[in-house]
Image (cartoon, rainbow, N blue to C red):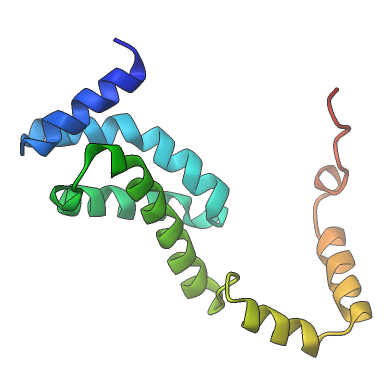
Length: 135
């Protein structure tokens, strides 16, 4: 059975209230949740975000009205959890444009450039070079 059909079957079975089906659903979607968290969270927050999203899905799966909405809901949970953990870690929300603009206004171009150079120079030599692009 193709993966999409397996996922749809798992969603349908979990909607019936079967706890084993819900566990199977969580296992099927965990790689997608992790991949999406890796793109949206700080690397140190990925595992926590995945775990939190899986817990939310397990607790609130019954609130999903349509099976077709499940994936969208799932990815919005990941985005929300990544933002929440980022705000907690940095006491800063990178999606708050007003705060970003205020922060940028307090720093001149030269100080920002110096911060970037210092950050790059603090990296081990192998991490400072940009690999050549692939054709």
